[in-house]
Length: 494
Image (cartoon, rainbow, N blue to C red; front, side, top):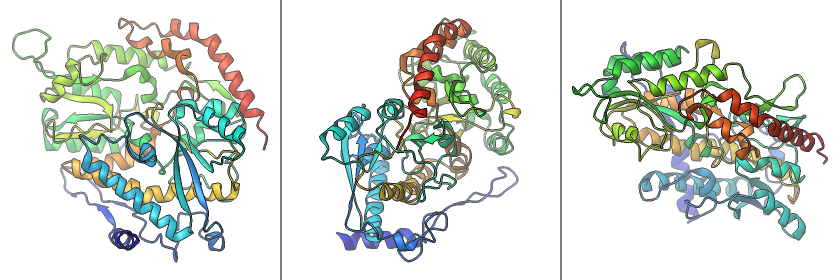
């Protein structure tokens, strides 16, 4: 078996994965190359790795087993590591899922051969990682060297004092590209960074919200190329989306706004509408470094009004009831919907015609960055429990898992997506404008829960903008929650 894996690894490392884009006047595309880790061998460490000059420590933990506590997912069969790699529907996506599984096993074998360390993935809990860590701590004879909790359960882990601060450690350099800069920013408070995410997991990318679009309804090759160019130039804005959506609407001839018309836009899963424009429920005050409510951003009211206006227009198709069972989902399947907002996990390409993909637009050009909020119920974070057998080893393998995740599982993921799309430009959109801009709402991720639920749904409560009222009702409880976060983060001790 090892010989087979070794042969696969040699092939994998010698053949770089290149996304070649046609360069012509119509699509104005460029060539994008994804580093496949061809130099990540035991004799030549990747230049993007902070320990590249510390080869003397590489085999320090040879013979050890790294125990990694995972949060299971009810719909994910098989080994625990599949939980943090991909939401695999083995009925629909068996080929895609098999590719990810294969890459994970190859990465595991590479780590064993390079560092002499076995990885042991442990199904510690379905949801409550803080309970799992508490029980392991009380047991005194259980160790978890790393843990991957769900984003929405992180706060309780800090409050329990179960994890170490990862900031300022010798083997963890958050400036490396295989860590997500938005996650580091959004989880660093009171001078401490207990959680982060990056290329060690695909779940944040899989559950990132994007816009699929029908190229034929848009007008074909030239309009599609123009749209992609607008994304590149930072000119893909809400107003441009509305203009295209409005122009796509077509009545079926009966003069009635009905199920057989062609529509321009449907925004599903809008409970987190504000995140598409970079607004979060909670964040960190840059002047104090403490948690604060950030949902009271002045532009939220404008965003709510814009979403309601778009949803109630003749050219829009409501998707409040969700995707697959809604009239919007039917319109998409029938080729009668231009833009549809969903997570990237769903593959509409090929099944529903000639489909493309772009990030959700900016509110205006001044926003300066696209945002793709991810599903915090499914996305996992990385943290280091205090019950690790060796903190330095945990530090080191946080980084090992991150960069090898980039070079193995992320590569396999991109290859799988490339096989689904008709042209390489979509992969450029995914790699350059969607994945780097996955947004992590710390408010939704660290225990806010139902406290802010009324505010999250405010924009579509009868299509009336009652955001201010809903926020005012939730604010007192939210302030208490924020205070408890600052107490937990600020009271950290080694």
